Length: 291
Image (cartoon, rainbow, N blue to C red; front, side, top):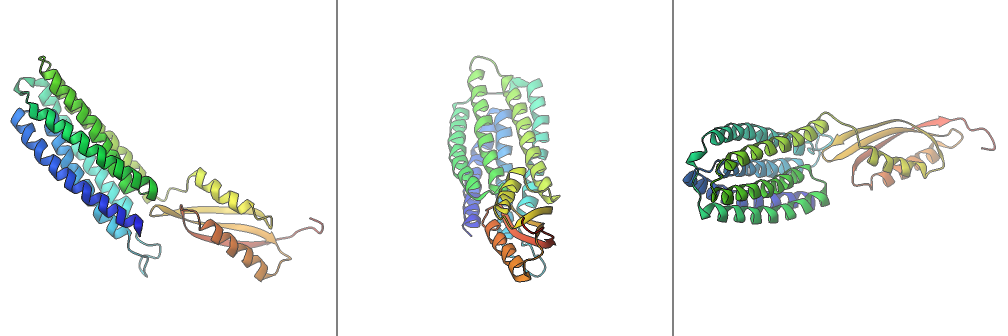
């Protein structure tokens, strides 16, 4: 339950922080005709939506399994992560269009020290949000939090370029503002596409990673009674996996003894953070005397 409570807190902090940044970026961006700052402001609006989707998706994913959802509601994380990614892609395309126009008509740009102040405030706020959210994402292996953490650090980077554009305008290089706007839009597009792909893979039941499969196989191979393993399958359940496989055991063992081996193995594998449920099928195998 700590996993879901932590996600809720991170979402609320993200919403509050981004509402603040959206307000100051929009006001200063419009006042100075800075396309980079306006793009940054629209990005903050997208961040609010992202945090809101994280909050809702996490709330649904935290529900326990029921008669209609035997494997729980964990995939809600990935559905809402996909919604976040789609919104990021759409926003990036709109920002790209506006930045091209600003690059072709840079003369409207006006420098203001408020641009510098807003950039510094954004970098400081987003860096704090990134450190907090990223630590939770790693602790709980949460794709929604990781998507938000990536968004926060992306904002730090793109706003740094925005800050550079502001200072360059002091020496007459005002076209760089449009270039930064284009860079921001492409960065958002790249991040959104990666989140979309990761969410898509899980929703399409991409199998467990080779690293995690090896963890499971290492546990299985510790049991000398198991002579062979076949039909290994894994299905994602939220951020975890349900796995099933067939083990071959000496047919001379009693039914009780065989199932005791399987029960013990299930308990050991279920201790792994990546595993939601383990289902084992037992097949007897003929063992020559003396083996």
